[in-house]
Length: 142
Image 1: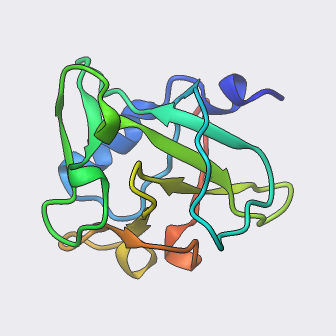
Image 2: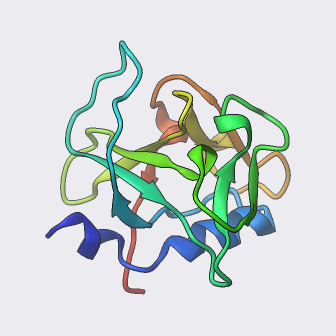
């Protein structure tokens, strides 16, 4: 199955979940140009460049390009700039479930703090490696 079929139109789920402060979000989006991972971070599979658009046409933004623990994500961008670009990286979790790390433009990963399930301090973008909290499962078609 190709990446466009895998990711489908579910990108709005991330934007809505982040905007509502939901920590355990699933990720999805549409394919775009890929970028390289930071040095010393193994890539175990395909790399996909992505943007995430909300239902009303705005884009998910990693404020400052990532590297933050507060004021981390915005959903008010009306055009795609560098902060709205993410790289979807196969974390090597294997099949049948493939989990991805979401890399920001300045080499940091999106983190579901505590692995998710929180209502405050839910998302960070300061991780430099894919650990358990930086792995997201893409679920489409539900």
